[in-house]
Figure (cartoon, rainbow, N blue to C red):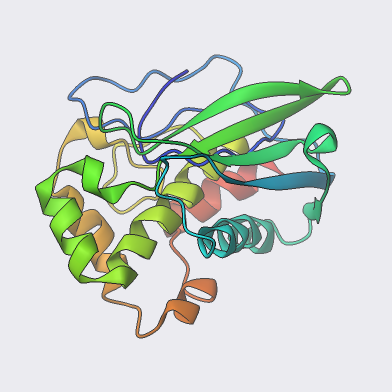
Length: 213
């Protein structure tokens, strides 16, 4: 499936969708499911040529992975692995049609997995996003981080919601998209705050914990 938060690639054993900016209903995959409990391997790639990837984006993806791991209270243990062995794989790709990201299902040694594609070129997301991201590096990092968090949510089995407060909100429902990112940015004083400031709503937390009971 192709969707649109930004294009980071994470590979997990699941099917996923991402935030689309088009005014259309979300296309949820029928195979969207949780991962198996226990050890889950992951791999984060370097950025593709033309993706506008920054070396520090790897840290943002890692923080997003750890946020889901913490939320699941030990139901999943994430471990770094080689690309060919990883159930979750994160890739950084060039901009395309205003998409933010995408999650695609994988099979790895007979297990469900997922690849997440993140598009970190904020200039391609329209002037309201692009100009603000150029002026404020923390706003740019907020967009990339929350996109990772959203796409990984699909990898862990979550579908879209129509609630603007959720990380799994689908942009096709409308709303002030710069404000969606801006409310998180306002909670940050430094880049390191991203590692300890949750981007999940109470309902995001409830839904993912229900999947891993």
